[in-house]
Length: 113
Ligand SMILES: [Zn+2]
Image (cartoon, rainbow, N blue to C red; front, side):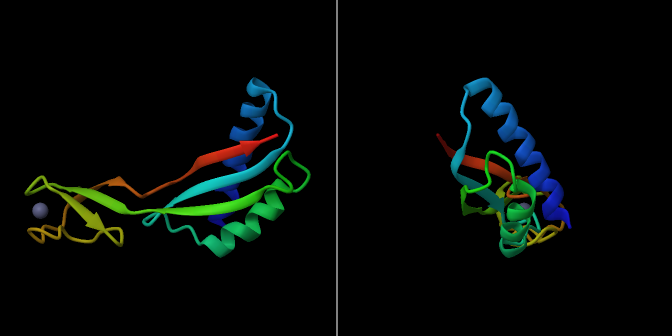
């Protein structure tokens, strides 16, 4: 499951943060999920429990925030909204659009104790 490895990364980031900033527990974590990242919120919620078990984020409240997909059209050079990866440009219908936003998952906000 793709979500597990993403969360292993998140856990590592949290542990590094905890070391540098001296906190011991994560109270609430907001994860930003890109529309194009292929991350399933439900799968992520399940994986979160598994991965964070026994860590400093065991009892953390998990919140999702969705980030819209955006791409740069290689033909008309406009920013075009992308609902799916490989969508054509909405302005000129050109098929080559470089994804600029919404293809990843990251930590958006963190509340710690
Ligand atoms: Zn275009």
